[in-house]
Image 1 (cartoon, rainbow, N blue to C red):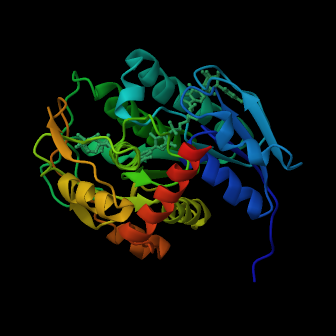
Image 2: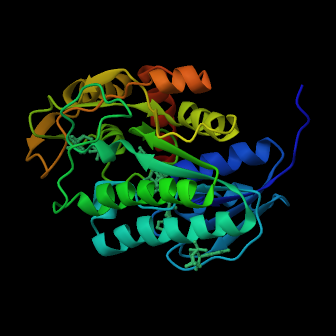
Image 3: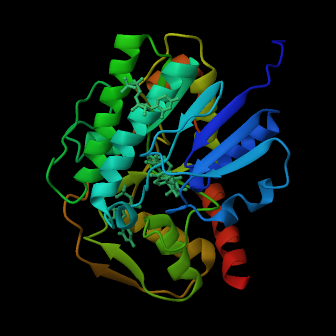
Length: 317
Ligand code: NAD
Ligand code: UDP
Ligand code: UDP
């Protein structure tokens, strides 16, 4: 059994959907967690249950500004992630990815900390290779409405690998595919939260386009497990490494599943497909399987049931 080493760990974007689950898991492992967030898309409610914990510290801060703290490890998750949020202030989205990465890398360099970057499947854009492997270079429109997010994340990856090559930083880059679960924001416009809220409230389920576009949905607990394994892997495992669920569904099939699981009487209606909306997306996770011995364990049905329960509680609160 390896000896437990208690660390002081910085999580940027720690009040967000993924960040709050990560903070919780790190605290459960016995670490000290410094959660840094500007509360742009992550509400305090996500972390309010952690605030009494003496090993948890919360700091309101925007990562586009320098941050001087002493930590052993850094998880950089700060960035709005849903299209309606990241397009609300596109310039700020790019700044968050790029200036945020520079500041966190500068911090990691000064304190010699291992640093994780939450990258995204969006670096593949509207992919021409299917499923997506890490060596696929992507098909991103650099001037479209999604570019602030996609290109910001691509540039952040560039910075991570340049700090690694130039300064020998110990980096871990995960390309995260669509993830869902409790603490997604009900109004963030993402497909899982939209469909569940619509189904529970008896409103029409809004499919954009014909619903034949595909996504692969990973339950949050599985995703966090992959992130922790990547961070704990031996030196040399820099990534980029895909983390996601390789079971691919059409958006129409997702709508039908959510209607069935909620017993909703909602009808399905069709709206225009947003510009640059990728037609298909599915991760090849062979690398994560080989290097991290990781694969998702939660079926879409089980994960959706847990997520539906969460949204039911929100509605009845
Ligand atoms: P989220 O919006 O719930 O969380 C992001 C958090 O970052 C929020 O708490 C927000 O307030 C904070 N934030 C935003 N800008 C900031 C800034 N300038 N300074 C400090 N804090 C800031 O999103 P999420 O789904 O939890 O995503 C977390 C990370 O994972 C993001 O970097 C996202 O790009 C990445 N990711 C998520 C998914 C997914 O499916 N959820 C997929 C791919 C990548
Ligand atoms: N930085 C930070 N915290 C630190 C160290 C650096 O926020 O503890 C920021 C700093 O503002 C700088 C950036 O990280 O702009 C990049 O740092 P680096 O040392 O790589 O570059 P330099 O300071 O030479 O610009
Ligand atoms: N989508 C949809 N109805 C909605 C919200 C989203 O049909 O109410 C579609 C969207 O056009 C996209 C897919 O579902 O094709 C996933 O959208 P999401 O915003 O969740 O994630 P992303 O496009 O970033 O993968």
